[in-house]
Length: 128
Image 1 (cartoon, rainbow, N blue to C red):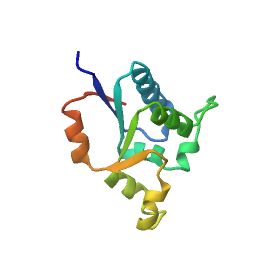
Image 2 (cartoon, rainbow, N blue to C red):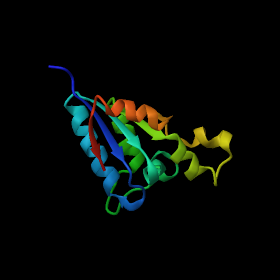
Image 3 (cartoon, rainbow, N blue to C red):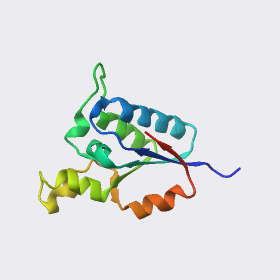
Image 4 (spheres, rainbow, N blue to C red):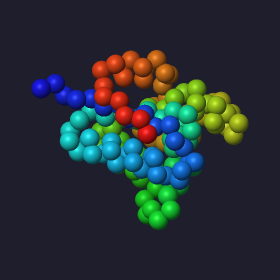
């Protein structure tokens, strides 16, 4: 049997606390624990989760931050890809362009939509 590959697309930012991101990460970790290939793509307002300062947020009643969950996901073998355009649009007002990459959490990668579109062709896609 060919290994299943999964792409989790997250569009929600801090607008709902950590709820949607937490669901996406729990789902992703479940797939990783099943030894499956998992990539998470953050787009729209979800790119904020890849920003070092905002990733330190935690949901109401949560003891673990988004950064903690993202680190576990990456250490478990999950890949985190971040929409370059969305990230730059969100961060450019705060940082100079040359500093943008230094604000990204460790293990995340800025990518264009073309790369994600290509990956979606041979993966099961879930959107949060």
